Length: 310
Image (cartoon, rainbow, N blue to C red; front, side, top):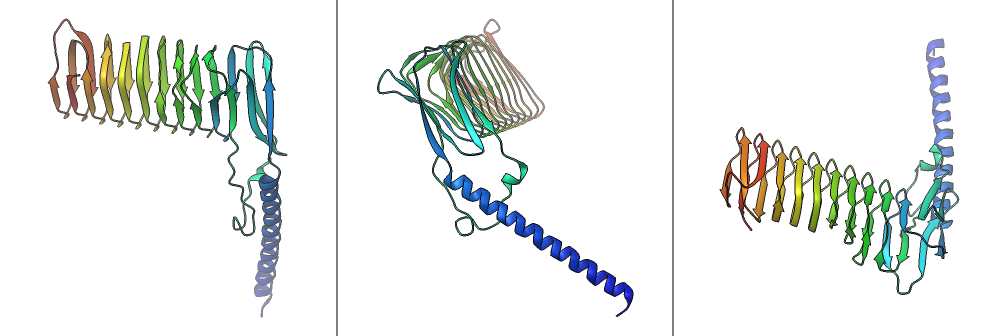
């Protein structure tokens, strides 16, 4: 065995040994962190006794739920561990629920087999507000992958949802302005009976029902489908690339739709002046189409348009 071969073998052995050490450390950290994550969550319950009008919630991945309280008491529940803690306080007439994340990069190392070498904790760690029915001020949720669920029974002023991938269901009304910003989160169902609505999404679906806006509704999306059911607006603007659009029982003073390949199907209430501009898309119009009707403008490349009376 020559000198070069010996050198290569020694170097290979050193690299192999170092690799085994790193894997061992990573496995140890993963087991340690997995054990902490599975065993140190603590349910925290906070009774809110101070008066407030507005609600602002900041969350990472724990779902956010509003639950109708059986009494007049307001209670907040959340889960803390050694790395992720929450704060609940009333300040400037606003109920603030926020979090502090002290995790490091190595806390996310996962080496091993869940359930065998690493413990598994499948218990949900939802952040829940038990809130009496009634009227409140502005409602805002800032999250990452947290789902948001709001039942019927509440009336809010402005509603703002900012999330990356969390799904949103809001069955309570906004009497002010609605704003939703998400990447892939779906708006499973939302009601708006206020001034205006602004929705920005990439691939998440948008479902709006039984809503009346005295102002404009603006929706910007790439591939997310859009569905309206009994929606009335002063003006509607929709910009999409490939998402399909379905409007049932729709009414508006001015409608503008820009799409590349998404199809549009609408059943409308009222009289419209329809302007359809397309390269290869087909149109079928069987509603009242008159020059003095409300403007309904569609610009598309290959999307089809179908409009009929509701």
